[in-house]
Image 1 (tube, one colour):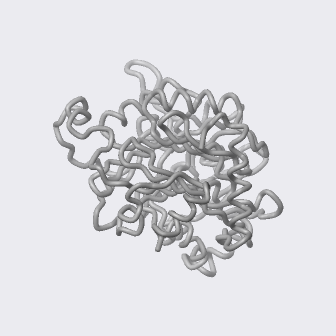
Image 2: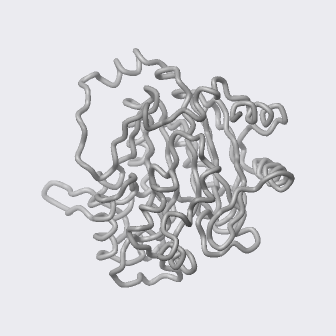
Length: 376
């Protein structure tokens, strides 16, 4: 049924057709995948050199398609905290249709995971208990990025707790770390023989907090390491991480926090960064921050999504409540197709749109591409 529905959508011109989607969608990922969580002990790796791997596998990897779902800014403040306390994982049950047939799901978690610490000197500070990670995992989320301008909202103590929560979490938490090497450590998983890597980083940091929030590596005989966030402001470092992942992955994803709040067109910095990441070897570049939806499409052979909007969010009024999940299907480096599944935030949690409302929302989302420089 999923393949038939997507075929109808393709005929309507909403997305390009997705070859083999009947195999990719709906297949149980758990039975065909293995995962390395960021922040855990490293797993054994083969001694095959990257060059040999690339030569043997080719641009389509194992030849099987994999669908990855992405969703935007999420936290558990205000009514969401109360709902989490009283409803537990059930509060996120409405999310299931948004990515039920995806193999991998990644969400931006815009909060510190702590009950301690002092709020940082900024306008908005968010925090959540470790149970938030349990709720997201229970809803089918595989990885969350904390590389954003709220990941360290409660200072060093909050970061210590976030790292402790990461170590015990039932999903992967990326974008934060004890130092830069840890913060840039990606989420890795294998689905139907396809090696998927997701790197997280933020291009958005409050100016007065950049120094204390940016993760740094120790330098021999000099600067000590600094815990914090993976920074997309250090473009050279981020592109090196992409190139490294390219050598040992079939599909490379970069999940970013970027853009200008309440603007629905990408900034020049976003477009420049997307180009640099694609040139370095990224196949999919997506992100959020603007609290608005932005356009998505193809940049050469790669896929770029400039803005996922809010997702699990305390304010669903007006454009703040326009949301959804972005599904991208890839066979190795080949982007087979993509789909926007619209939803609306209500009482903090998105509910998928149906019927005419969904049709209108998809058409509106397609129109956002006009100012991106991307193609359908």
